[in-house]
Length: 292
Image 1 (cartoon, helix red, strand yellow):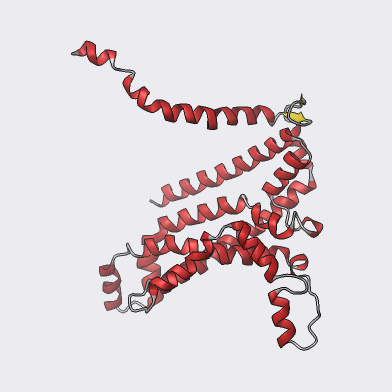
Image 2 (cartoon, helix red, strand yellow; image 1 turned 90 degrees about the vertical axis):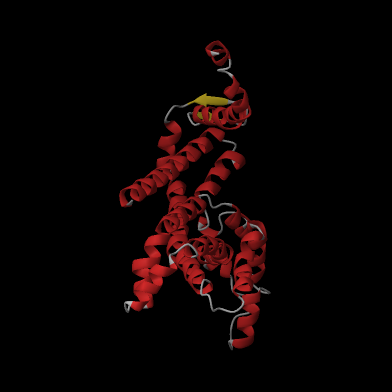
């Protein structure tokens, strides 16, 4: 019997082989190749020169990198400080048992997250159009002397991006908070209410501690998604926009890799972004572990 068990040591690896093969081809190999590529200066797909850490030195000396980092950081900060409180507020409202039409309102707020980033960008380009945009049309009809054209997208690039993302992602994050709120102990809330706790006190001392793990997860998800911002400004502005005010880290990577054909420098940008994301994830995990 021991002999038969010893001969079957390879059986688990047979079942694991599809995953291991897929991981090796589509994850491990591209990661190794991109790490090697990050140390090269390329001229198209077939010509490259080894430069070592030169790409990373050039990256930190390039003012466009710091501009992209600044724009992305502003967008990320808005996603966390504006988008998540709005999503949590909507979840608290829609979690009320006596609210009529709760299911309908949940569906309405969640639907924008299903239409896709490209559709949202095209829709807001129509809404914020210079002349015939919906905003300008409404303002001309209600505000005397309002100019015939007003370039919202050129003057308020980051504001436009933030508003568009709010419309698309608030309902998406609301679903996470709703799921967490439905698991909050009703007995604890009723006990706090009997003890004279106000609505804010019940939220602070009962509700929020129980949904805190989900809140941390949604923060991490929002930060990671915001740092990868690309499609929305690229479609809405047709690029980085005037004075590159819509330039993001991923758009900066795209410009260098696919417009200037320097795939080595683009790989260095990708690794720098990956290190930032990994640092954020590890920090959030450490904070969660310390709190627990």
